[in-house]
Length: 218
Image (cartoon, rainbow, N blue to C red):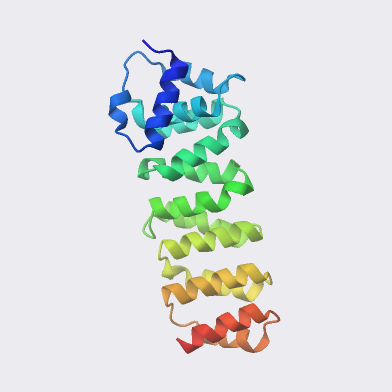
């Protein structure tokens, strides 16, 4: 029987090729052994990725519980890239709350990917996700606000128009204002004409004024 290292490399290759993962099922593999291997300083990226795939998609244990265990018990920075990559390729709604945790503790480099992944896995009916995004809209840094706005746009969360108008009135960042206006334009949100006209007349950024002009012309 192949070694655990070779087994995980095979899983990684199969996953990358969109193979049926059930052919890699083995009953003699222990999740703790896999977590220890992921923690090892000698593990390759392919082995780490294969271990993550096993924990999320092949282990009979609850996948979100495995993901939490992975985050808590490993050197997070070491596995971050592989974990985000695997979730991007094949995540499901069982992973929503783990993605929320990854956004909280993860790198800024992955934040946009994770917010868009969250939008893909959820919808505007999920109150916990909407509340999570509202928190970033109100208290997040500039980059996080843009990511949250993009996620809300993808989720078609037009009910949060008051949040977008509040940001347009308060946040002077060009990229944040453009993200808000893009959401308004994409979702065809009504009752925004007054704020758009105000920005068209008074905003200092030509890009924002041009965006407002386009919205009013459509």
